[in-house]
Length: 251
Image 1 (cartoon, rainbow, N blue to C red):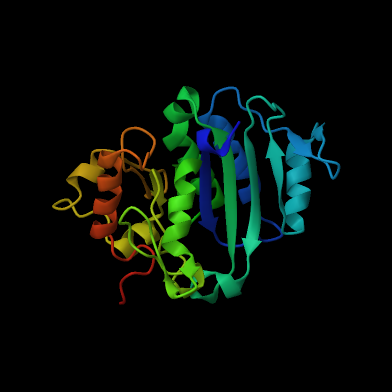
Image 2: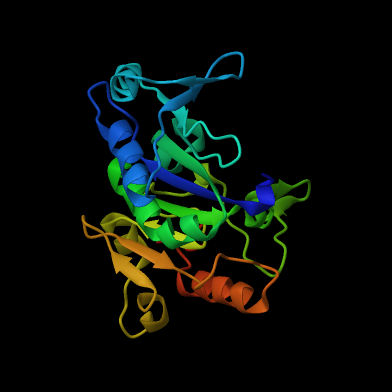
């Protein structure tokens, strides 16, 4: 499977604590969303697959060490992987360390149909501030939005706005960037001013509330393809609507 036919799910959450149950909750949330999915395998130091007969206990023990190890479905022809790692305070918004949880998924009809439930399940399980689910093919354009050039500021492609480095964003509740599906916790939604019924009718038509009062907001009906002018326009409109995203406005 190439990166161009993959979906990447990423959420940003508070760091793990030794007695945390969020690792298991995020794994269970992903499994519930995609029928038949079981993440009961790990990758060994020799890069071999090994089954986890006591998966939940293994993850619970890893959490006591502050770890969110990679688990997968053990199918090299249809790989689904989920893992997490901590970002230090030095490279995190507001100088506060974060847990980044990421899943890599096939870009096919079954995953697309379950995409909103998958993002909600992982984000709510991790108690994330915000997150997104986006085709990997868009990752390069996102990198150009953020990465500084030798001359200084980033040089985005396709007319997209430049975004601040993560450590220069004032609060972890403010999303770094937009994706195809966007999860915004209640705190994140408040930080960016969503929803405004008068301004967000189009987004609300493709949005759903989560169990904790957050939102999953879909920018386009089909997975974001920035070679599609309509998709690119939808992304640009969303950035115009939410200048707080990426630290582009000052309080």
